[in-house]
Length: 289
Image 1: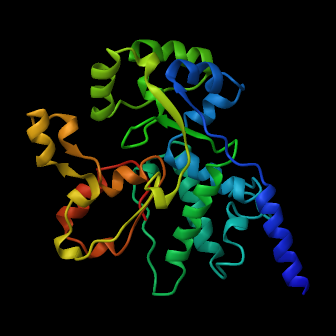
Image 2 (image 1 turned 180 degrees about the horizontal axis):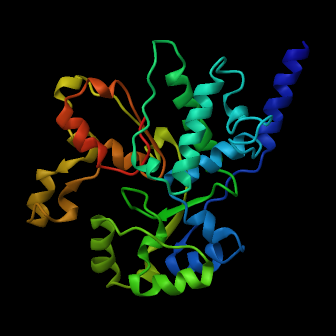
């Protein structure tokens, strides 16, 4: 009965937890109401995928640093009760994200989890996914994206390069990245190039919605197709727009796009052909598993 009551208390506590508030507006409102709302907001909103996952690990591990002896490992709360005897491996995973978040070249490498069956690899990735989904619903983990963007890209990509120096001087962070072809076409066609009117919304990571968290498992590794990762030309749309090079003619349904801004798990990927792996390594900046 004691365990039953504890579970009921947990249910009630979960139901009373504050929910992430949706937000939607244009880029001008995003600058005024979100980015400039708090002194530390610009740095949080300018994070890349590695920095975001590292912050999630610190958040779930009570903020301890990986190098602090005698302290809990980052993500220890996230993994507790699920993974046992893997402290060294978990420490190496945390060290990877710590180095990548600091801007090291480590961030250009794919992170591979190797080990025997039932070694905890899949469980580790599943816990990371659920941690990202939960973290994105907190104030510190709030993410924003250009509404309708197939790769959920940061609104800061809208800033013209001529204004990025002033942005850095004003807010103390650097805006990096380019608009995807899809959003660049929308900007010109729908808003006449006026980036201040591009719609922006809060992004809640959720694998079930193919938003920021994804899984790729080729049916046959020997015949894995890049189209499953990065999409392909949609011939039905070519007839409408008249040009295969038009972003509107592209199918943005690949697993890489779904996992953009977050994490993509790739299962049994080492069984695929070398050519496929080489092209995969340069197709996205989101971490692979």
